[in-house]
Image: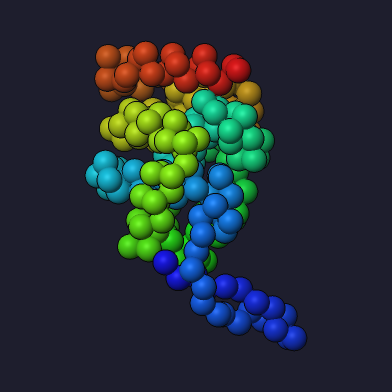
Length: 194
């Protein structure tokens, strides 16, 4: 895989040279997890159901499940108008992966990104552990709409509703607990308290 390496020229503009991407050296663990999330969204055919809000909340919940492993991401989420939001995820996560040519956006991976994601999952034991929960989380959240997910998050983490424009969301009529993997949601709550 070839990466366009950024170099500053004398005028402050970036010129590009090419070199091979080494996921261990060139990507933070949080970036590798973000790349894995986008890979799994594509792999599980959840791309058409994945909104930007759903992606952000997916990454938020994952960071709550693995607070020590994803400390660099977990600590960046703040209450916002549509629930937890991380500027770090947008800039350092998605933005950097896009700049490297590994993703097109929050739900579409490039062929180069696919190659790196598969390689990284095979070689990184910590990522393998997170990947299992990530797949389960995507499968749980995919059928839900954004308001359903916000309802769940605000009930699990009410402190993230303080700036929300939709904090008083009532339980959606269509959302039945039986529709959810309730044990998984319970696990989210328990693991988030670690």
